[in-house]
Image (cartoon, rainbow, N blue to C red; front, side):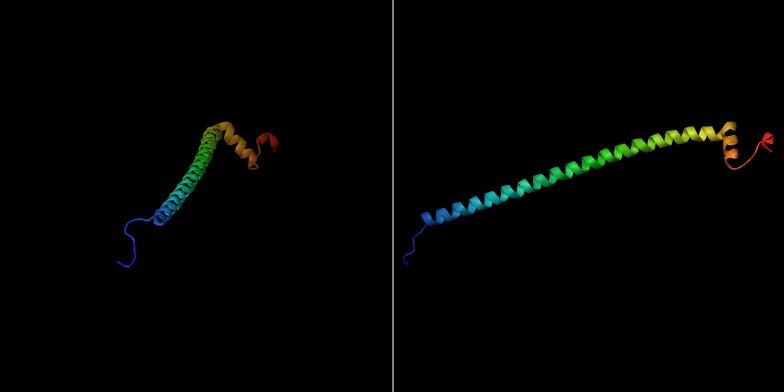
Length: 94
C-alpha cells in the first residue's frame, strides 16, 4: 500500500467526536425551539378560548335580556310605550 494506515486514527476519532457533538447540539437546539413554539401556540389557543368563553357569556346575557325585552314589548304596557315613542297621543293629550 502507499503508506496509508488502516482503521480509525486518533485524528479521525477527534473529527468524528466533534461532528457528533455538533450534530447533537444542533438537534437539542432545534428541539428546544420547537418546544418554545409549541408553548407559545398553546398560550395563544388558551387566550382565544378564554376570549370566546367571555363572548359566549356576553351573548347569552344579551339573549336573556332580549327575551325579557320581547316579553315586555309584547305586553299591553310595552305596546303603549312604543306607541308613545312613535308620537301617538292619548285622548287626554289632544
